Image (tube, rainbow, N blue to C red; front, top):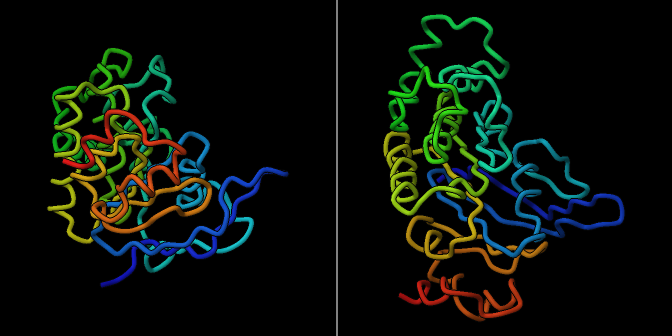
Length: 242
């Protein structure tokens, strides 16, 4: 099986602050990696390094076969400007073109509509994003991420701000995308250990350095969680043992 993501001895520094230190792991194609760790552990820095937004201070990051790999990034919902005057359709087409679409061709609209329908929000294509609920907007951003059929889909806390029912539907959409695209790989930051256990094929437990990497059953154990978080945790600890 081919590697989708190969990280070797990755260190990222910002001035005198080390955000990541000597991080190494390999994720195969078709995998679903959940990245967990406390606040300030370097999780978002890792994702931004995978997307090329941040350059390594030391070490290397390799995505699949190289530059030809299509990578899409879905940011945190709380970082988005809900008042931006845009329609859902326009937002998805911007992910297709990699710039804002002042005019939308019939071909681009068809591809964007297909992605919106796949994400369950086709009916909201011409709705201003300011009028969407948190769950609807997150699905639109997922459609934006999926519109180019990426081989690597990177998500930063995608279920934050979504209610319990919407969260379940969101993860179902991710599973459906991987079912339709067997070589597609997902890397996702989450704070929910139960989500990592039930949906991920691998877990990266991070606190600037790698605390653990492997199958959820091997990594989501009290000893490693204490090493990463410094304490036993909260209610999710009970769910991990279920």
